[in-house]
Length: 425
Ligand SMILES: [Zn+2]
Image 1 (spheres, helix red, strand yellow):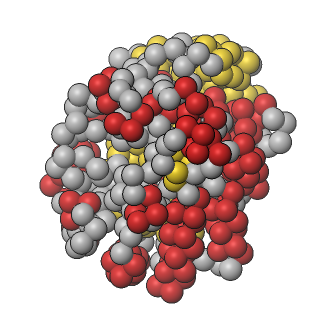
Image 2 (tube, helix red, strand yellow):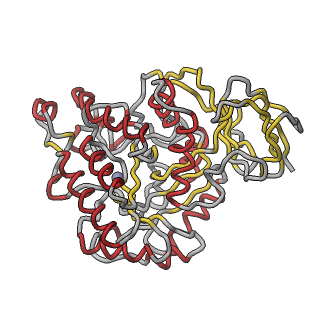
Image 3 (tube, rainbow, N blue to C red):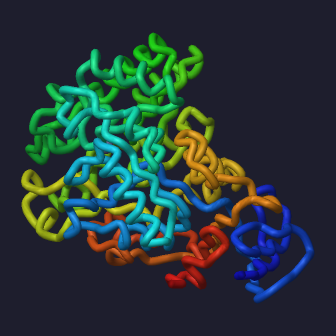
């Protein structure tokens, strides 16, 4: 039995307490001390982070990432659970594949790896995958997504929404109208025109979101919108929520900080789907995260090997790393801005993503008796970001930037996975 005390920790409500962890659970929060003591004065303790959108690349693309390396990156980022996207090879579209991913996650042992199931067979957008079989499998899949591709057929989307409603599932849509984005390379606008790169219009995202919130309303089902990137998308989600539609939305760290101006160097490290947008979009996304229109931060951690990025822009893969830097960007937007609170931070990084997916044992309040999944961060630290960290890939968009905050400890099921900012196992 492992027993230790996180001493003098500041909690999300501003109170200061000792957390005694024993045998996988929080034994007490207060003044008690037991076992080995870790001085946490000045550090903030939050429920372990939960990522609803992670590409772990295994099976099939182990040259980019494995479930083990991605799990280590997640732990270093303060995560105790990640949701593994379905665009693997083979695709996570059967009970067998999702169970395999879950088993590999359990064996890695750094975070809870919850597989996401594909909406359509082979992500081909033609025929619904075995959603019920994946939900009923040992992986207990509740979130389904063809992420990387849009479920563009409205009839299939309507059927998928209606189907998952029967077991409380949710469809997570990658909103990208395919005809409006053929060969698109970056945000449509003055920078794309100047650089001679094919533009990716905001309406390609917004038109799908508008359609899908209406389909969610018509079916009475739940829809989750992946990686909102435009001010217009925010307006549609705000309208849908006001109308009472069951919609939730995520924003990535990179869409909260980086703009399409970065494409000027033609460095494909900044090539991502959906593309980096404008500072006006960033302002809208930040405001929406604070006011609750956007529910969560999800990383869309998308590792790629060097050869997929060390090439000209048009040939490069879409995507960037995110697990080890997300908490810093959350801190920048919510805390260092002076506009929000640690309680909101805990919601967007842990509690709400856990609630959307219904993942057991995650996103729980730090109270006695609950499973001990805890992230401890030093908000005063500054970090110069270099390289890819624990990821197998190094497509790091924040390289060379100094970001606020650092994850000091991560506790997963009562054991340290990260201790003093280093992997503990
Ligand atoms: Zn996507």
